[in-house]
Amino acid sequence: MSNTKTIAKNTGWYGLERLINAILTVCTSIAIARTLGPAKMGYIIYVSWIASMVGELGGLGIPATTRKYMAEFLGMGDRGTARYIFFRTLGLQAALATVVTGGLLVWVLRDAAGDYKLASALIVLSIWPAMVNSIPAQANVAAEEMSKNLPASSISILIYFAMIIATVVFHWGVVGVGASMLLMRLTDFLLRLFPTLTGVLLWETTHVQPVGLGNRMLSFAWQSVAIMIVEMVVWQRSEFILLKHLCADIRQVAFYSVAFSMAECLLISAQIFGSAAGATIFAQYGRDKSRLPSITASTFRYLALTSIPLHFIAAALAAPALLVVYGKQYVGAAMVVTIAPLLCLPKAFIGPIQGLLQSYERQTVIIFAMVLASIVDIGVAWYLIPAHGAVGACIGSGAAEITAIGLMWAIAIHLYEVKLPWVFLAKVLFISVAASLTAHYIAILLAPLLGILCGGSAAVAVLFGLLILMRALNPEDQERFNTLTASLPKRVSGPVNKALGLLCRPAFAR
View 1 (cartoon, one colour):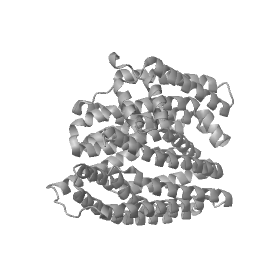
View 2 (spheres, rainbow, N blue to C red):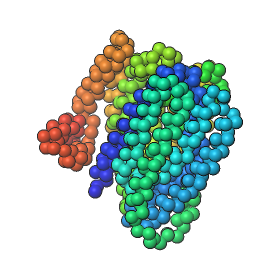
View 3 (cartoon, one colour):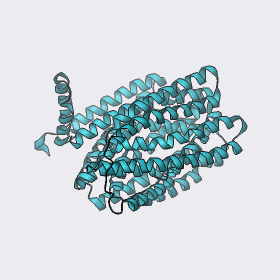
View 4 (cartoon, rainbow, N blue to C red):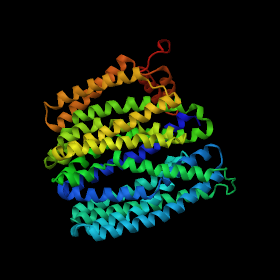
């Protein structure tokens, strides 16, 4: 199967998984936010974030190591070594999960506020299945079989949704939220582990361990830990800690979380495509690494085409969307939800560049970029949060993302001669700004819901009109589209190909 088809297949499966999770997660978060209010919501978010970060750090980069080296050896056709890596990392992750969960449980039982002690303990207990579950999940990614992650993820999020609805109806409060999270992660773990385990057990057991593999894996794991530590500052809302201690209004934590969650929804398509492309990049390293720069550049183009317009239009419609979804009690988050889509846009481009650098085991580049970005994040947020609360936290996070991702792409361009489409990027930016301004000026004239519908529709019309007028795509894009649409029924593929052809320049215009 070609890389185009493999990426498309995994994009589809992972996209379906993320879409189901996103819809139900958004619905449950809205229900929780409206039921608990900004104050209680702020505390639960803080405890959940601490538990999540400690759990990720406790894994010592093992899931990333599993994905990288299983993909490499599966790409070379060596399933015996891939099997060995799976069981070795699974056992180590289970042991670390036990230590991390036990230690954090002691902490919350001693220090958590009385009304939140049981809920906090339930959230902490959910760390164990979540940590161990990351190994079979990454094994499926390494095998480029993301479809195998769908059943467990979908069923577990449905259970979580049902539990949250019950919590709202029966007024179980913060304890219901904690129990829902524990049950969801247990279900996900059990339904994912056993099918993956059954498949891996069918692989051949004989293997010749390459010389130096253990040292490579150990070095990669420790570098992954360093990356995870700085990623917690740059990507994982570390601003919660500064908001909690530098801002007297606990509601600012909830406001920042709401803005962050809304902006994160915009990243779903980029994360889906980036993850699918990243899985292929890891496997391609084992097949033919000379093609990695071109695959990375192509991934960048399609991420720019989809993500930049989405984020610009969302920024124009974020404030009315906040009022419609969360209600007037969250009106204090209007400014932060408006700037969040633009400031989190750089994160859409992290997948392919991180995959490229990790494939070449150049994690030191990622660490350098992340360390510098974390300094920027803490400095900017520390300065702005006391006076501006959630807005200052958002600006600090955005400055860090721009620093980290900009540096990684710049270094990769220099090291591996990745050729980015700068003219194409300028076209997409111009079109996105025009569509965003259209949405903004229509939305401010109407009631929130009507403004979203009319402003969004007009923005989409402007977007596609300008894309057609400027013929933004290249002839090779049409060839890739034809490869993907060939699997569609002829009645569908014909009109789709014609519509896509309007966006592409003719071959003689290269």
